[in-house]
Image (cartoon, rainbow, N blue to C red; front, side, top):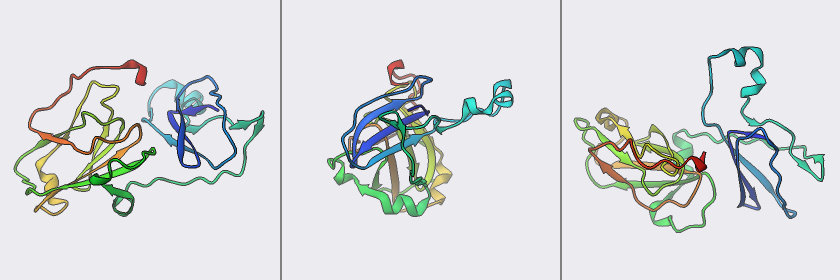
Length: 201
């Protein structure tokens, strides 16, 4: 199996393999059961001669057939993973549920009982989390990946407070790599020079 950029392989809902994007086929053993593959795209290239001459080079997703005993697996059901408002509300677990068994794509939702002040900017510190996407008052702050580094904080401008209720702050973390620590830190100082671990890429 070849993928781009990252895949989380689950068997009967339990993660059994993480596949990093590579030009080399990845092989692993599985038992009979429901096989699911969650694909993450880490970005797209929209410039350069390679895309023009051979766009397949930058195709995302599963780029080669998935084989079992050298035979292609077919009849896949393709399911989108929307990150809009209704999806965030229906799939989020409370932060008190952070000790639930982890599976890639788990959503954590927490609410801080303090007013959201649109006159003040803040930074969301993702230290202790793995790899995912953070939402602040329903607004997508961007991707986080403190395991790889170096950026640890995401910028949340004050005017975002107009998006949701200003009486409190809601934060949603979509986590793919590990169980969340159950908390985040809001700080007034960015951390952009954290440790770097190339083995995570």
